Amino acid sequence: MSHRRFNPLKDEWIIVSSNRCNRPWKGETEKSEDKGGFQKSEHFNPLAPGGVRANGEVTPTYTSTYVFTNDFPVFTEEPNPEVPQTDDLFQSQYDVRGTCRVLCFNPDSSLSLATMTKSQISSVIDQWIDQMNELKEKYEWVQIFENKGAAVGCSNAHPHGQLWCMNFLPNEAATKKRNQQKYFQRKGSPMLVDYLNQERQKKERIVVENEHWTVLVPYWAYWPFETMLLPNRHILRLEDITVEERSSLAEIMKILLVKYDNLFKCSFPYMFGWHGAPTGSHLKESCDYWQLHASYFPPLLRSASIKKFMAGFEMHAEPQRDMSPEKAAELLREQSQVHFSTRKNSNN
View 1 (cartoon, rainbow, N blue to C red):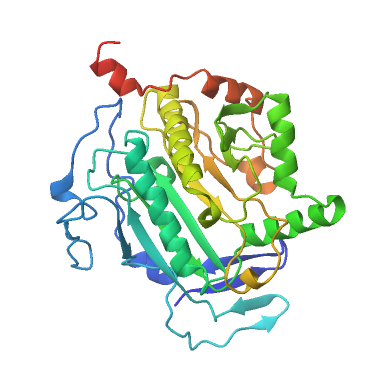
View 2: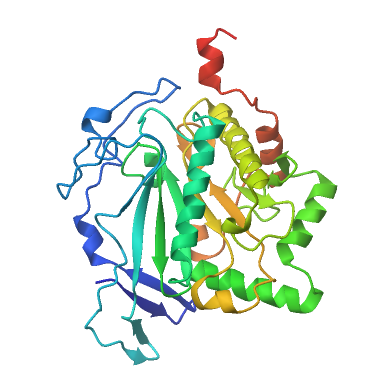
């Protein structure tokens, strides 16, 4: 069973999930130069229709999106018999419950969100929202995320993401909750609404924008080509967006991810996640201080083969970056909205 342990030196928690050691790992076994020649691998892929997963389950023949409970979940609803420790230096939480799900974006293993159609991306967004509506009453936090590429530890190249739901607020959510509340109490307006309004005036770090959404490189970005995706109006949670906003979200995600791939002519790896207002018991309280947002954290630095690592100083002192956020935004902004593999195939 998973549990949490408290680090009093940093005032934060860490999740301990020994059962995850049993999961299959394939993220570092494929060494290939991906220049746009995406290869199909359905016959060997447990996430593709008809694939056999590590626990013997057969993935059904799905035609759009497909959701199933993670075969090696961090969180389950099973009670943990362990007794928590309450000593200042040895604190633990054993009442850690939840569920973990895998969301296959598309049955075609050769695709990524960048190479899917707007309609196919819309199906993913619809599924995210359906899952949020189903899970938000029961769990304090529903983390929607995607790890794309072996460079960020993805164990399967099939287009997919995950949802981890839990009965507590994890570190990042708790910190963002606290700081957005403090700002709202001081200013009377949501921090990220004010921030976006100023960024849209400055135009220095905007990558792409449409009627309903804006993508920018944050002023405080750590990863070389980190971006934040924000709605242009005040929205608490993903499931609160309108039909029109769903459509334009698919559009702007497609544009951004094509720009990412075009930057180094590769299937660009990244860590992506949504952060909406907390759910569960928090649905009964005002969360007007929160603004919905998503972040992309790509590890690539100067080329498809050069990664940024958190090195000695950064692990022990403070994050550091070389390229300015303004320059990163400029490089992304300059990229075509047509995927490089399509241009190559059409001799353009």
